[in-house]
Image (cartoon, rainbow, N blue to C red):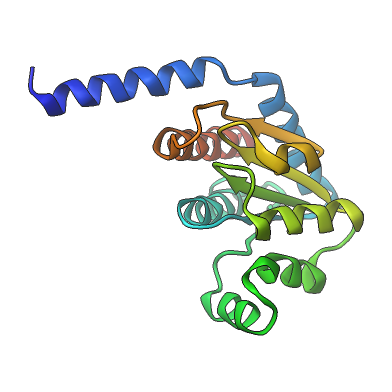
Length: 188
């Protein structure tokens, strides 16, 4: 077997080991919160940095399109990481740690969900936004890796991909699997 094939086998083996330790009850609780948000017309905001920003964008799309088929109440979903012009304006004028909070100040209503996605759980701009949601009648949700970081302590609902610090690839892979798992369930 080639070095690449060995690496691939070991990577998938590690991914499966992490997935086997997921708390499926916490995933179910987040699914329930998303479903309740759809029923009451609340918006679900997603945010993250880097790869987690891409996951935030993908998650918002999957809920707003795939999980909102004809005949069902559509999800109100929005990624706060999607508007580059707005992000850079806020970062320039108020600092990068405020780019998500400033958007929530404009958009969030009581009972909206604010979903932070982060491998470390310690991204200052996401932490600040979850705190804002918690303090202003929003519902903070964390999808995290490693030890869960600060976000795990702030959020009302947490999906924790428990992993070694620095295992960005497997954590981000599983975060995308969670997007598809949750969205396809809610599309039914």
